[in-house]
Image 1 (tube, rainbow, N blue to C red):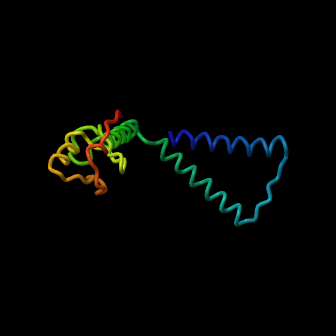
Image 2: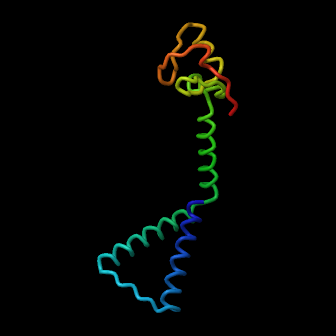
Image 3: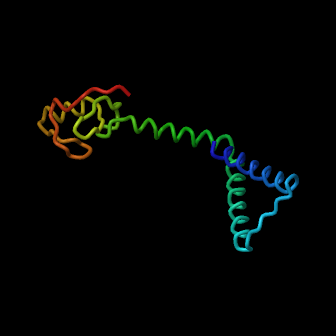
Length: 129
């Protein structure tokens, strides 16, 4: 999506410059250094657009699959890395799976696995993600 936005931006810039020069006879007065800097920035954006649009379909699919894996990992418990997050510790708002937090409560290790904040049974609430 980023590549498409960059292409649209380049087309808009080219179109605006064409309109300005053809229809309105507007002249821009830039110093040589400003003009050189703008041309360099334009070339950088143009090169980035070319790189993004030249990506193969397989590369795009792989990037999307990697992003899906990252999103799924965010939803997994940070203690066991197996089950989905389903309870929140209301004192610090960290999320974990219920069995991991229940185990902490049963063995009287009543500190948040994420930050160490002490909590009790009344500080644990179920959440739906």
